[in-house]
Length: 280
Image (cartoon, rainbow, N blue to C red):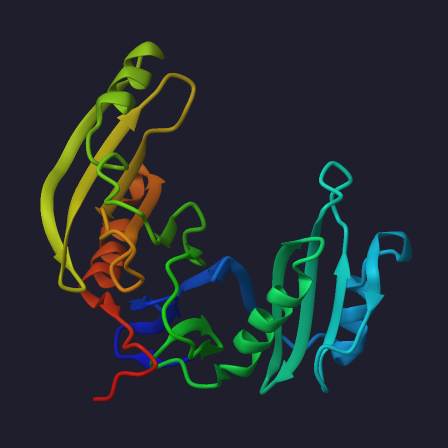
């Protein structure tokens, strides 16, 4: 993990940003080429112990454990009885400081296509996270995919009610609906006898991209007064470097100063990660 004068650098997918040191990651997910990829610390007992726990029951394995590549653990399984023709491939490989875990799906008969893709993804892993598709611990150095999705959730250890979510999704066309107006929120608040106040509604640049920033405070009967900050960039169709981006901050109303400080740190530091093939 890299540190700056204002906090820790978080890197996920095609973007990085700084979060204050007290803000901790509580969840993250990444997928590229419709394949889920994550890195985890090496558990107690090493890769074998992890694999034993993850290995599906013998009745679900199709066709069973097999040697996809030296140094890997891999297995096909039929996980959903409602879709018996859809198989899941899970692969685990040791990396510096942990494991890389990859999951992909394929219809029966198309396993070889998924196996080749997963091998390419695993083989393209590099321990640095300053370019490519960032996993936090290292990155994937393949060419960009038109199907990429990432999600990161964080909370402030000093004020656990404060949560920040960061999400990107490649799109076929710009998302011009999400977090762009407050008609639905106003209707919901009014229907529950509550009130909604707009604190900020403006265009704002982050990472060189013009997105919509909205801050609201709300009071709904039976709930504590709350805050929600959003920044939404609609994305460019079929672009992994300009996906749809949603940043969401939430907190109790009395934590406005703290939420605003975290928010500004994240947005002002947001930057794109160079493609693996790019040179400085």
